[in-house]
Image (cartoon, rainbow, N blue to C red; front, side):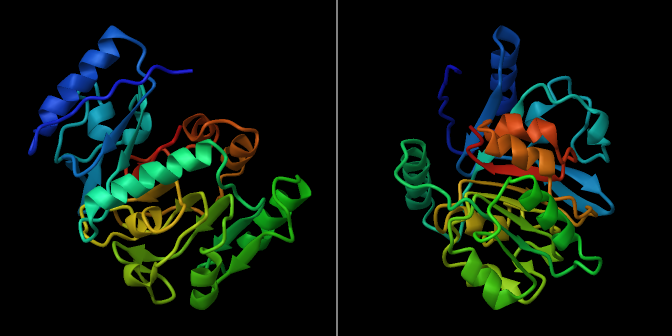
Amino acid sequence: SYAVSIEYTEPHQKKEDIKELIKKYYKKQSLAGVILVGDLPYAEYQWMKETMVSDFYYQDIEDLCKEGAVCDSSILLRPFWISRISPPTSMDQILALKEYFKKSHEYKIGKFKANGGYMAYMPLDENNYADYWHEKLISQKVYSNKKSKITKNKAEYLSYIKQPFEFAFVSAHGDQRYLQGDITSNDIELSNPLIFTFTSCSVGDFRDSEYMAGKHLFSGNTLFIEASSVPHWDDTSIGLEYIKGLKAGLPIFEAQNLDLRAHMAYVWLGDPT
């Protein structure tokens, strides 16, 4: 078990002040992780001529990666995990946060649960990777075949995300408000898979008032999302060891260590405990 400390920030608190506070916790005791709640400041870096938002700034205790620079985060130490619970600013943020913590508590006390299946939306899949991973997940008895869904279709995607899958995997082109297949953030009315991985470009860019990952996180019972904040390249690996860790009952932050998408472009959204 872990002790929890809550620190309140002032309006318009500088990110440097928040980082110094995190450093104090890190140096005084064993710090497992940090959750940033609300519209807290962020840092920006460079990635392939793009401006990348990343909370890696707060993990970079030794200040090895300068803000505004291009950094190879895959070789930099992450001494603790960090996640963010930040509703899209187009929403009533106070209400969205209240509803998020309510559903998180209700899940942890068993008021609702997943259906034992997973879903995958893979319109980019020209080599049948969806079938490959499906066979792996079913043959290894990770998920139920009858309760799982694979699609490349917009209407099916919007229908499937209303179901309480344990896990959802999205491999599609994207930007802050768009997914390949003509899916926009305005289309997301209800999202119930507990955990998502998006390999799509930019859907995790929480600076955007309608960011796609945020609309999923705060529109239903979804609890956690990993998603990229910039255009990038990723493979179609579904994260098998990560998923198996989740099925074994590991907290999300521990399961992530089994199959980590390590690039600093990936942001964690939600409570990974």
